[in-house]
Amino acid sequence: MSVKGLVVVVASLWFCVACSSPQTVDMAPRVLDKPRLSEVSVTAPGFYLEAGDTLNWRRDVIVVEGEVMPGAIEHVEARQVRNVFEQGFMALGFPVVPGKGGRYEVVAAIVLGDSPAGDAVLEVAQLYPSLGASPDQLQQGMLLVGLARPGSRQFLWRSAIQGALHPEFSAAQQQERIKVVIADLLQDIPRR
Image (cartoon, rainbow, N blue to C red; front, top):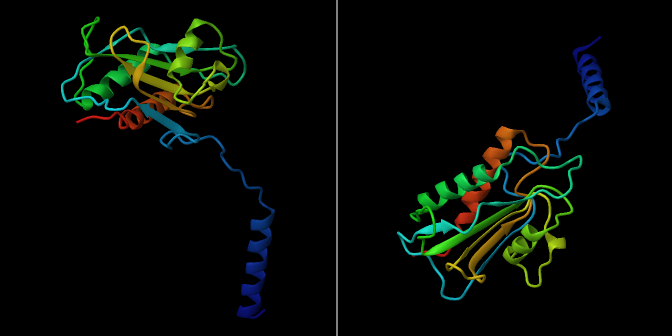
């Protein structure tokens, strides 16, 4: 057999093997990918944070768990989300103070399960930055945050990211994803 014939045989075998091998595609989002769906931010006219403005939590992070069912997002705790937000605010120069002494109040929520219901959902629905939002629009994996004056129900800035979390992530992957998503989300806060 000539060299040319050997090359043709080897190339033919490689082509047959390559075409017959099943290809698997990982459809799960990678941890550091930006969320697959949308991020929306809404700001009241004229609102901005100035360096040194202090913040405090209106309440702990709202965790909307919905129905416990296969595919629910696990490995996420309110305290963990709160800590990441506080670190992000501090990095931008806006310290989070204990109690009610801040210039603005922070409200945040994360939707872990499907079919959310209850008072927490109504508060979350107010955060959702689309006009006429209802609890039906809150989707699994969504992360929401808003800033308001103390005691006010009107948010001066609010933002939501769909697809912030994914049911297939491990605890370490969820934690890393939360850090990435929150850092990205906080970049939209108007500031001087």
